[in-house]
Amino acid sequence: MKKLITLVTATLIATLIPQSASANDLRIWDQLQGSNPKGYVLLMRHALAPGTGDPANFKVSDCSTQRNLSEQGRLEAEEIGQWLKRREIKILRVESSRWCRAKETAQILNIGKVVLNKNLDSLLGESDLPNHKQTINIKKRIVSHRNTNGLLVFVGHFVNFQAITGDSLDSGEGVLIKANAKGEIKIVGSSPKP
Image 1 (tube, helix red, strand yellow):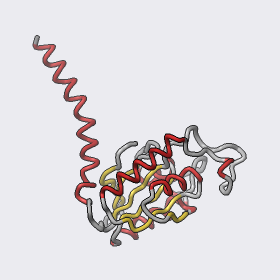
Image 2 (tube, rainbow, N blue to C red):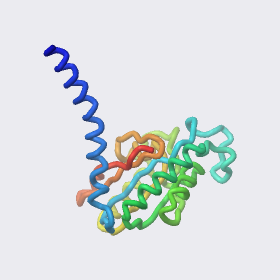
Image 3 (tube, one colour):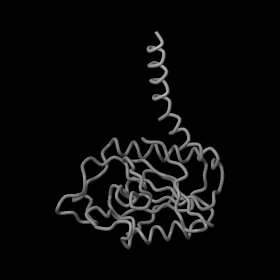
Image 4 (cartoon, rainbow, N blue to C red):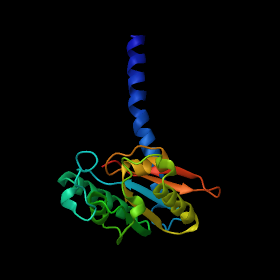
């Protein structure tokens, strides 16, 4: 009987830990709700676009040559946008990769005018991502934003954001980050997974 109780207790603890961690990741949003936060940046991976990479005939100006959002991806982007709107946090700016799946995600969020930023374009296939010019430019923007009011939202790609944070993001997932006075970028929370 003791073994059964121990097994049940261990199972309950194992089940509760991920939920508790997720709640901790989301807690920051409660603190920011209804505010004009200073220095916060949301790095969000584009919503679901089945597959990996892009076809060999890829052209940045032609969505028909790219991997695009699925219907589920569009619904996810809409849900995330509604979730962000319910937080009532002042959005300073929304910037996106020029890739259609990122641009469309940013537009469907419907939380502000979308500005295209080539530094958010996918780095898949590039080398030394942490020291790539695009990564360095985005890090500089994050650091320079630390004394600015309003949430800065970047919509881009898995490899780009992993190079900045070391974290892996699922489709539609985001991490909330902030730079400190030393220029170190810290993850302070996440947005819910779609």
